[in-house]
Length: 216
Image (cartoon, rainbow, N blue to C red):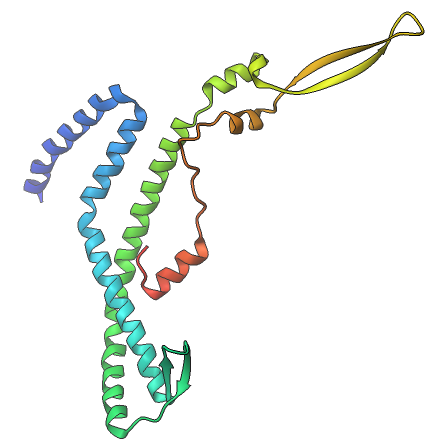
């Protein structure tokens, strides 16, 4: 263990030095490097996660199909529904044998799947936080904020008309005032079109994928 730490420590120092030196390109560049390095260093975890997810998905689908065999049902792909079906004794015996084997192997497969899915979720959350930080830095409305506080004419909004009674009875004066845009509208109007907005998380779809073994 000490040998591993002694060999890893210089690599970490060099990595931190390169990361600090890359700060001349901006903080968002450093965040992008951290995100890329995190993806590269966790690639083996992703590979094992894909293997565990595919195996878990195959087992769940097989157990579901064999369960339909017990109740005399079969999925009809042409009509996209489950129809009744008559099975022979040999088919029931083979189905029972396969169902028993897959059912007893399911806890082991599920354990591997849960562990590596949890690691995958942690890495996705960290990458999501880094991506949102970079997006926030690129959309930071410093210039718009300065213009809004200085009431610049570049952020002109609606015109406000006011009728004022003149000293003379037959004349009426109209005063025109320019109102500035609200701060949120100013930021939304002058945000760059190049950046795509962050998509909202679909938690229902993610939970469904987790329970069915679909890759996330």
